[in-house]
Image (cartoon, rainbow, N blue to C red; front, side, top):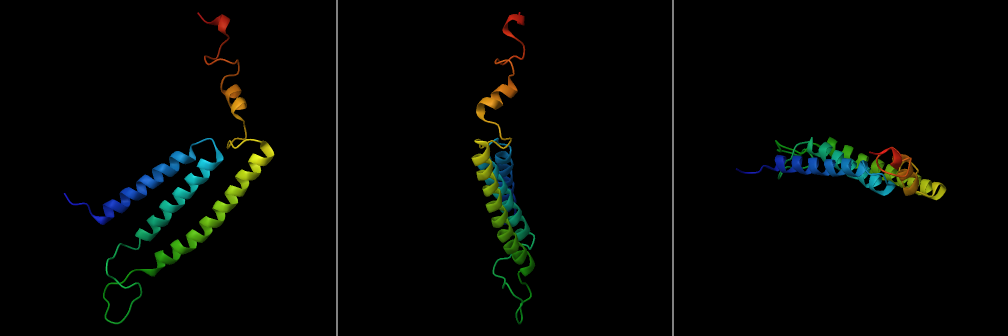
Length: 134
């Protein structure tokens, strides 16, 4: 069995997307920013691959060239990289401001102690007071 370049690229895009989603589900700001960046990279590679994977083809149609690379996905990805960089900077600034004003880097703004109190309001894990347990 031979691995084609398309299968390799599709698998790579899938792994990067899966890692980005995993990081997005974290409760802290920095992993969420990294997850957004990874998903942005996966989308950029996906758009770039939509122009087909050519080897040895000129990027611009010249004289006598029958096969050429499509420049539109390249232009779209270049634009997406610039926009992604700007939005990543903005999200980092929001995370830093949230940490400065709220004193926590949790996405929901709660500290570790507040998060534990919300999950276990009575100070224990089973949801009912210790004297009611049988």
